[in-house]
Image 1 (tube, rainbow, N blue to C red):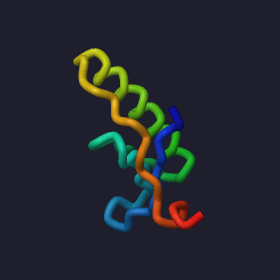
Image 2: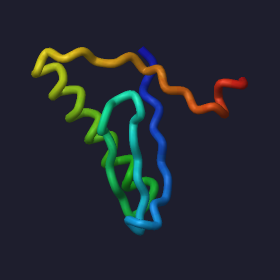
Image 3: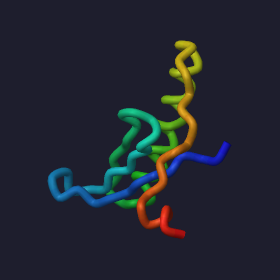
Length: 72
């Protein structure tokens, strides 16, 4: 399985960076820097996957691919 795509963007409203994983519903994290947001979302991803497995819920395949990569 290929890994999940992670979006990282600056939020003026939050005055920091948001990282999210589109394939994992509601899996996102905040950081004051892009690196911090990435570290936090990787921890959130691990917790998300563990919770889904524990609850015997399906784990989604990595499907999200930003438009910029679809043309290549």
